[in-house]
Length: 246
Ligand SMILES: O=C(O)CCC(=O)C(=O)O
Image (cartoon, rainbow, N blue to C red):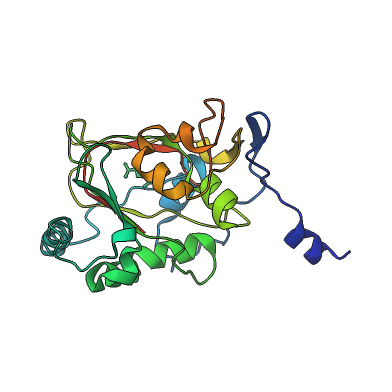
């Protein structure tokens, strides 16, 4: 068997096992080579490799953010002709918690996902053209929205969607301030260097219960131990705030 064939058939990230298991990440974090023409500075690129995330400030203008906030509020008010199947409510409430497949259903958020200010650095870090694997809008109202427990997006995408390798980036666009009183998204520096395989099996329709219970993604694997998911490009947790993840 050729090397190329092996790399497409061997699962480098086995998960949903009998027991939680931590392994070193076999994939690079930065796939390309930095040049002075790159859309990120050398320091930013090195920081991404070291920490597994990068925070870019003031990427969008206040006018653009206001337009996105207004559109998010309009969708939450039920004015967006959204597919009911793509809406997840807060547990025990009728308040919208998450809208999935945002790019398919809303022209403004579709445009946002294609913006060179997001897609450019992503494409540079992955050293390839990029496509959107998934998009969602999390409302997370401060103090009343249920939290998102520690998790790794990659573990879910790998186990449930078949994403083969860690050649993906979660780009979260924070539409409100990310401070202690407003449900900050928390990232664990360095966690991207490990892959934490979860214990347990995957229930049917897992994405629905997962999104609602995202307060505790440990519930994701049927009969699972409390196996928190870590590693990918970040390990994150957050509560209470608009954030559009693309
Ligand atoms: O925005 C956050 O605070 C966490 C959201 C998240 O990690 C997710 O939707 O997978």
